[in-house]
Length: 343
Image 1: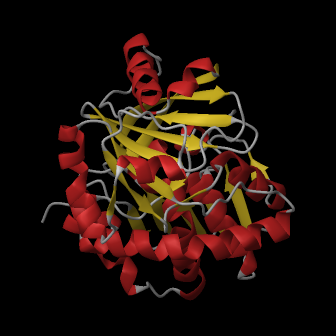
Image 2: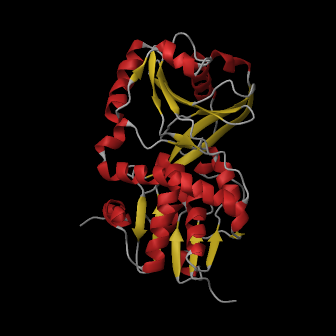
Image 3: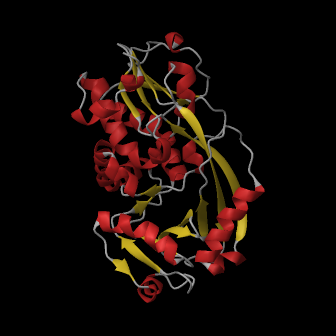
């Protein structure tokens, strides 16, 4: 059998999206998944597609990348649904950013101002989201924020692509003209690049469908929490951010998440806990992704940290175009894998 044009090492949402775009460009592709069962950050992620956030205004290149990918998500989702026949849970209802206390309100009001959205009074928030606690002091509606179910996205992509479950430990042994490393936290071992795991814990609940209408992104007594409702009554509650590598779910983290969630939406106290999840976000020293050539044969697409789901469409397009044409889009300039090298 002839060697494929490209081997993609990593069977998560980034690697699969790249492989899909490469096949559309007429290249033969082999996907090598490093995990025997779902274990990547995508499996734990809630799937919030929000390009904003105060920190992104301090990094213009990253903000442009996030905004570009957010604009591509509707077309990406529609195309993938049509080709795979899998419904992705793509939802454009928008997000309510909410604050429980006066101090919480002061913390998030600057972000609303930067994004150019008006603050809403508590009564206006509850018109949009009747299940919110009457204690909520204020909020804002973010109409451009969307959500998707990452598990469905990966299932759709896998239905279109054969995936090889044989582990890859040596890129030199991979038989392909070009190798794309999209291995998440496994990228460091394969390439030597500085990608570290950042632990995150989340909880999935199930109960009355429609209790929550919007994604809720809240600050509760200084704790950040998000609630992502799915059709059928599932609500994803997340997520912690811990500089740890273990896989243990902890009582304290689950307690903090559930307390904050119920403080915002008291009705969630009646929901069933269906999953407690631990995952690891692949982070770099500057928390921006590594995108582009590592050498003449290896291309890297890793280190997406908290933004892997959001950045999947633009990453797939940029890396597929780079591999197919040999020319790098200027959007990649700030994310070169070699930017942490000495000298």
